Length: 346
Ligand code: NAP
Ligand code: ZN
Ligand code: ZN
Image 1: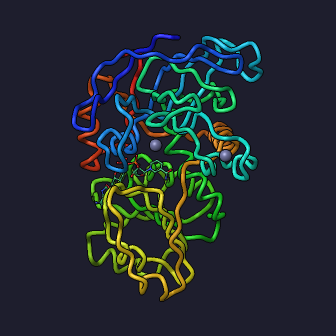
Image 2: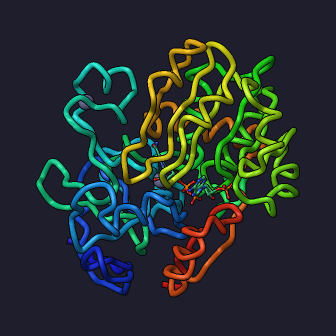
Image 3: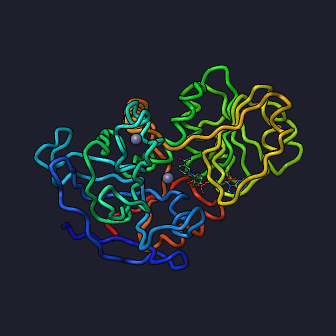
C-alpha cells in the first residue's frame, strides 16, 4: 500500500481535518501522481454534509485534480514519470455497457466509480483530491497541456466538462441566446464556453456585484433576476438556459424566460426536489433536461480545446487550512470563481 495524507470529513457534521490513509499499490495499468492542485466544487460540500444521499465516511473530497506523475505500472502506455496528469469525477466504470462502449462512462449502466464517496470494484472506498497523492487506472487519467496555468486547469476537470458537455450535446452556438443561471464555478465556465462557441450569453444572477466580472468573462448581458424590471425584459428570450444553481429555486419563473421550444438544462443539483408545474413546460413546448459531467473522451476533447483556445478557470488559490472558510463563502454565492487548493500547503 501507498501511504497518503489528506483532509477528510469524519462524519456529515464535522469540518474537514487532516487524516492519513492508504492508496492501493500501483498496478500494471495504474498511474500514481503527486497532486499539486485540487479545485473545490459545490458537490464536495453537498457530499460531506450528506445533502444528496448518505455518504461513505471518512470522506476525502475533491475531483478536480492535477499534478505530476511519479510512478507508472509496467503496462502503462500513456504516461511516464514527470508528465502532467489530471483526474476528474470518475476513476472507473464497467467499460462493457452500451454507454461505456461509446465513451459515456458518466452514464455507465452498471454505475461508474466516483473519485470519492464511492467504492471501487475491489469494494474499497475511493478517496479524492484533497490529498497529496492518487493512484488511478490510466484509462481514467487525462493529459493536460503545459501551456496552461496548472492551478487554473484543475477546475476544468469538473466545472469545465460539466458545462462543455451539455453545450456541445445541444449544439449551442451561433444564433442562440444562452442564459447562464448562477455565476459560480460552473457558471463562469459556461460563460467562457458559450462565448467561445458563438452564442449570445446572458448571465442570470442573484448577485448585482458580479456584473463587472460577468462582462470581463465575455458575457454580452447581465440580468439581476431579483430585479422585476430586468427580469421582465428577458421573458420568452432564451433558446437555452444552463442552470448551475446549487439551492432550490423557482422553476416557474426561470422556465418563463425560455422561448417557444426552448430548453432548460439542469446541471446544478439542489438537495431538495424542485416543483415544476406542467403549465410551465406545456405552454411553449419547452424542455426540461439534465446533464452530468462528461465521459473520458469528451473530457480529453475539452482539455485539448481549452489548450488550443487558451481557456482556463478564474481561480482563488487557497491554503488547505482555509477550506472551511472557502465553503462558507461558497454557500453565500461569494465564489470568484473557483477556489483551488494549493496542495503544497498540506
Ligand atoms: P457555486 O460555485 O457555489 O455556484 C452556484 C451559484 O448559484 C452561486 O454562485 C450563485 O450565483 C447561484 N445561487 C446559489 N444559490 C442560489 C439561489 N438560491 N437562487 C439562485 N441562484 C443561486 O457551485 P458550483 O460548484 O458551480 O456547482 C453548482 C451546482 O452544480 C452544485 O449543485 C453542484 O453540486 C452541481 N454540479 C453538478 C455537476 C453535474 O455533473 N451535473 C457537476 C458539478 C457540480 P449568483 O451569485 O450568480 O446568483
Ligand atoms: Zn464537481
Ligand atoms: Zn458501463
